[in-house]
Amino acid sequence: MVVRMGILQKKKNITIEEFHNYWVEKHGPIASQIPRLRKYHQNHVTSSEQLGIDYTRGSQAVDGFSQLWFDDLASMKHSFNSDITKVLSKDEEQFIGKMQLIIVEQNVVIPVSNDESLLKRMSLLKRRPDVDIEVFKSEWAEVHAELLKAMPDVKGYTQNLVIDRNINRSPAGYEDVPIDGVVELWFEDTNSLKAAFASEAGKKAMEHAKTFIEEITTFIVDTHEIV
Image 1: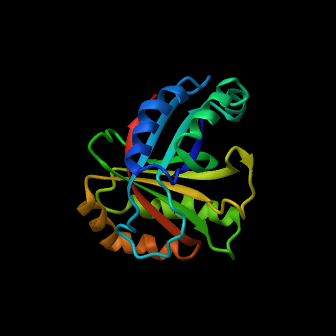
Image 2: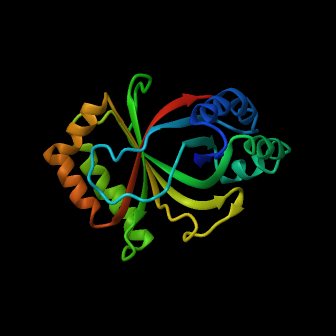
């Protein structure tokens, strides 16, 4: 499967509460009608604190992450060539100020058995300028994944590798959307998150991160499973 992720900033003339409410109550039912859609989750940012790590952070502001699952790229492209696209675009103007779109391939390292009561942290990754994408992919999927698995009390861990980019539905290059990956991590609570990264295994994982990642920009999110 492939996942289409939206990195959303709200319109400046609405409150964060209005953004969250409109997204769930108005936009969610519209987006759920997209043909061939397998799953649809909204991740509402509740904190932009660099929680658990001391690492260079990007300047990007984010109010929410959307995730839409499709069987493959062809299914996804056909879905957004349908009439629903115009309806979606018009509705997005009501509450979204800026939207970066990325297409990702998922690597589920630690499956989540039940995420209803768990704390979820999402992070945007930007690779070091001296590291090419192939090295980034291998270091992340083959080495870093094993180091994260050794950390205590990690309840779920998914890597999302970026394979394509858009801004407001128009094609964009890496210089416009300099994101190489999105991390999803689940913990019991904030204390468990902090303890995991403070552990020896956590310190080892973050030392390895410095060899291939320039920026890690973290967000705590509240997930709404729409479809």
